Length: 249
Image (cartoon, rainbow, N blue to C red):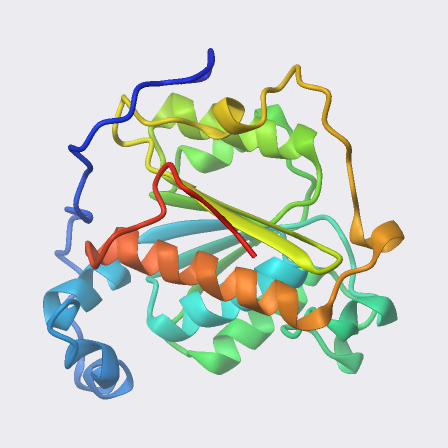
């Protein structure tokens, strides 16, 4: 897939089969996640799969704020978050995981504190660094699923190369001005397309960043929520994902 367009297949992986030896739900977790457990499409087994999952979120900005909040609340067992930036006043218009009290501190620390407040069962690993090809390879191999909330093509392609190498599903999101998009690449399937198939690495693509172009505040929440939903669907085997399909808003 990293070399270009790949054939699509109807045989898509259905959910995870993660080791669940330590993923039995205690009584407090059963109460906390009750509204998921009563959904027959998820149930207790699906919630245990979420608890067993190791998910890496790249970027703790607008998209990451919503993704991290919902994944922590939903009971993902281990959440990694990587970002090298600090919270600034201009972030607070849309990056709802941060607040005035965290201005000036690393975004990953701010996000980790909020996630633990939302769900004390959340095991959070913050990485205060910029993701490059080497760190992408080292980090992504340790996780089951990756969500990309970054804002530049170089980082997105580094993420994609590592996801292809280790066959890790990738949920990619983007938002600028009033437009957003989400796509899933379920790279557990060797016939799956990848990010390079959609946006070739050697293509003539224009970088657009919200610092220059602006972004409508609720847009990042809509896109981030959709990314979180796709991640939960992949992990629990619930419903039909956006694998190989680009949703544009």
